[in-house]
Length: 243
Image (cartoon, rainbow, N blue to C red; front, side):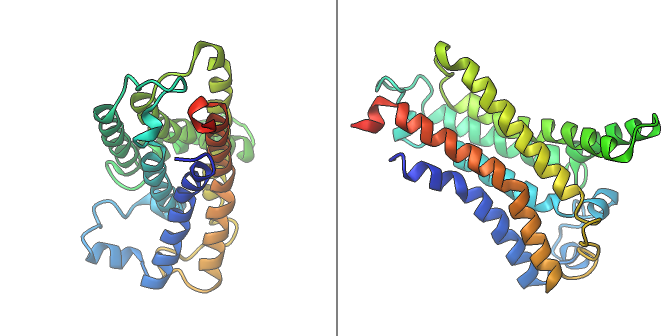
């Protein structure tokens, strides 16, 4: 895969999340229709009422896990030799990533441990006397840490560790991506306050659909750009990419 193709591949999860918004709007998806489709066991509850846009974060996360797994050519190390972690590791990484994203986000119900941990920490901080924005930010940070772990662990399983001389850069890249996810979940949590008050009790239509799409785009664009940039840098630095 060429270096030009990798950033495009990195943008696919954002496209999947936006497509999910468009599909939800076109299908008239509501909590009632989700229950009729057999999804009522997961698509209900306090966290759905408070942060419905997290549904599109789950779509982004699943697509990100799939897009982050190395292809056959990307299984080659930077030195041009075969990676120590081949197809079995990539399959294991995919299975682990899908299980983590779904489990941490939807078990036992919508929001999973991700939103429960975020709301718990935010609530404790607020009850301790801190301002609401501080509580909101810290809660989003905890949620982003769990969600980011679900995205990052599969990549560690599926790919080679970074060379010793580039480990500090790898840590910086991981922190930047965490900050981007922190921003994303914090912005999605503010959706109701920004005007997204009806969905999923009512269909996502008109201005509400446009607002949902804009929030999802603004939320995950920084993370998508960081992933694209890191893929571009890895492609430029790889001897095989310059051949």
